[in-house]
Image (cartoon, one colour):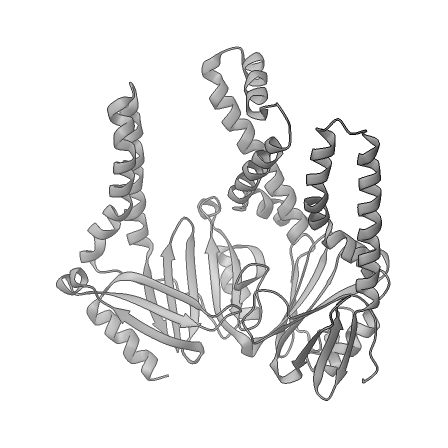
Length: 472
């Protein structure tokens, strides 16, 4: 395939949508200046039309100047309006090919193809935003990373297991996800930005006045505001999760896992089994009482956006976890028992959160009338540190190292010995006096590498783990 090709013309729409935030940032300044000046408001319309016209012209030119080809065992891409930017990707460096279909692609029966190399970047090295499904299949075969579609006869020949996320489990996964924190932070950041562009108006004051008139009792204002904020963030989190993981399915082929997900943007990810470095089982604090967990894999060249991990199933019960691993990843097994940390490390876990929290609440206790109520935070930190100590542990079985620890949720990592890059044992003076060590395990992943570790293991246990690793 030596002749250079262009993307489908629908790529122009994709470029327009992708860069809309950049356009807003460019024109928002002139708009605010004109709106607050004595100039005629018709300049707003003129400025907007000129900016939009230039934006469309630049997008069309970007599409016209974009070419790609595969030549001499390289994927070559040329782009740029005024200066030509050339990208050459040797085929042997390509780690993965991902196919997705957003709204634009689905309207025109197209797909987007992304190529990831071993360079360790969190972004795709090459993106073909609008190509036909036939062209995508052709490129996959040339790149020798064929990601076969589910209705392909080739998949039927090799596929021996498939699991789908039903509607009931989709709703449960959405309502118990940990996305509410991200939504809260994003909402507060957006609210602060909106307030900057409303002249002579304090949006926080308006919201406060509305809540006062609605609640009637000033004492209920804060409770009502917090409740409404969390309720709204929770609902947005549910909607976002449903859109992200709706239609989730996983298939095991001979040499790879095939994951599909997304309601609006359909994503298809092919993960070669030999590139999987570790399996992660994650149990959030909301899901743990119900015995629910999600399962991810860490692999070289793969990872969800902004992450080193790829979600391969979003919701499994404790019993389903064992069956899932046995079916889709029989090379890994989930252990039922773990060797705990040394009892000498218990005080460290008790105090690591308690002391900073106590220092933070002391001014509240001293200067506020009912400040003593804030003492429940250090008490909660004490109990949480104790829980972290009790949940942490490790196990070695049949060439697999399992490491478990808790931050907020409980995380369990399953690692095969030959996939581990390095294992290190650290010991500071306090740990040396207590015969303790800190364990760190490094594995290859999408961005640089992933470090997994626990602190407070017995010195002899640390030496056992290191001896096991040397024998792999």
